[in-house]
Image (cartoon, rainbow, N blue to C red; front, side, top):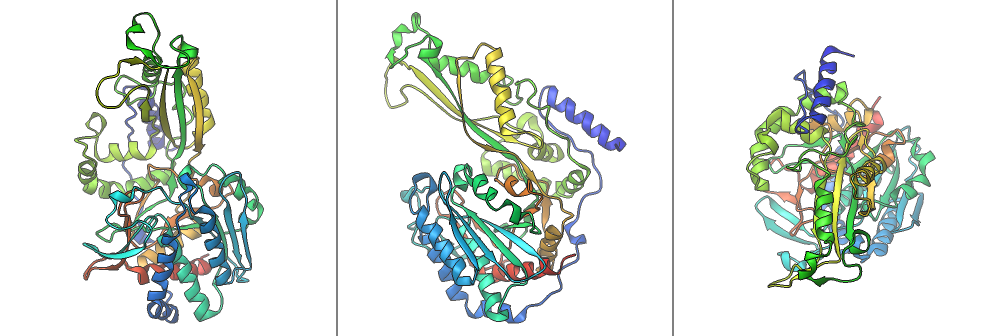
Length: 512
């Protein structure tokens, strides 16, 4: 092991066991995406076809966002699955199937181009619920409206993820219309439960695992640009485990069946206090260090490649960090950390977070009761080599050892982290296409959030989410994707988004 890497490990272990999870990564040479040669291919006839058919292509995006597919409420999900399957059939996919699962169906498609390379396309066709009163348009009308960034498609799933996904299919249709076939074989695997934590997607993937292993990688169509036109790419995601803790009177000695008068707290145990004390035992008093024994033990230090990539992103983070804080309404990060330290902690650190806590009366006025039950929802973001089941095992053991064996722990969802190397033909092809389009990306080790990419990376497949284009408002009101940017903007419009996808397929076909 290199001397600097040994030093990193020592700092890492100290950070995990002292007063905070603050993480330091040694300074070294950083990765520069500009070092990857730009893709040189030109597919003029296909580009012209896109320009000539842009109105029809936009209508496909509108058609997709108008079809509701709210997985949490089971609204329109089956219809959206059938719509996706029908569109794949129309493009000439030789195999198309709705794949049953214990939940919402998956969609499988295979396009045989008799090509040397095969690319898997991961898609999600479900969307988040909406509160229509919070929107400036009907969230499922698919309206194109004026915006400071240009003309945008404003609708639920405009950017997350129906907009970029249907734009990718538009690119396929354009290549096929001009060339008669694609430069690579395609396997499409879509799920309708991503917004639920993908609980049944592994079951869907398992049915095609052997065929998937023969592919050259996995691509997730994605709007990667910022309002300035810059591109951010991530090579990995954190895992997650989402669970509930519950205290109830039947187990702890408080009221068992219903709330009682608050005056009886003088002689009766309170489940709400019991839950609060159990939660408090999980971390230090400030909530910033996990005190569950062994919780940090499985975490591996960053690899040499991850340190290389990390050091290439520090300068960009330092330029925008203050804006990130301000945007969240946060005065400063934990312990006042910033710069390299805050980015390292965000990238390589694990978390334990209370998402919500409730019990008893929370309405207006006064109601003096002693609740019979109190519940909290928690999540933990996991980094290599943490796993959801081991995280919950450690939490359960900690609760039991501290006298909280009456606290109920319920797993709701979870999956491990996933990571892809920058030194793969797929990632290099993506970087080369960005460089051709004059959008040199900032490449990060991983995002702080989670996605079920492990189902593919555990099969040995590299995975990257990428694309030109800008969207905002995912999970929020007034979600949009830019269709026609304002003059002078570096943000790609729909035509440029589709041309990027065209170049990517040909770049991968030529990659060695």
